[in-house]
Image 1 (spheres, rainbow, N blue to C red):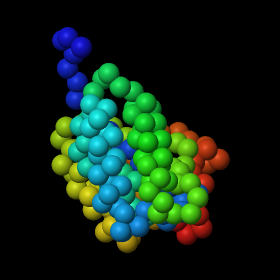
Image 2: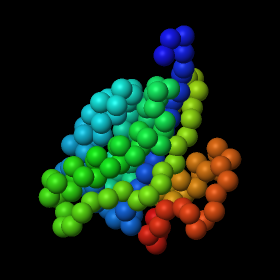
Image 3: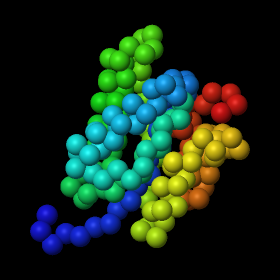
Image 4: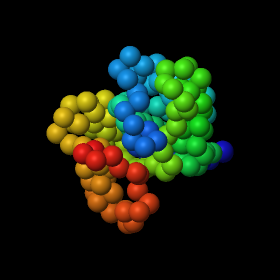
Length: 155
């Protein structure tokens, strides 16, 4: 795109279907590398990725040629197919429908990268549900409870 200059930084958060704790420590790094490859293959710039057992955070620079929804559809569909084919779990692996996507300015990039990479520590104090609800409130995103993720008790 001639004469098009952008700076778009997005943190996306999405959960494993049923909020099952399916991303084990043994497979976490491999899943993160695969997601990295998908994002880079789509011409986007990955800044950070961190897979927790029941959800994933990705932080990336988005080029204007691609919609957030299109990128996340590709990431979720290709990674779930790949994880299923690995045979790590009985049945089919899937991500829940939907996601959260939150934009940040350039001055916040380092802070968000640290936040994404420090998820293990963060979730010692805060559940995924609390974290996700905090994002919605912080970014003043209106929502209806019935359309949020299916929550597992205590999460």
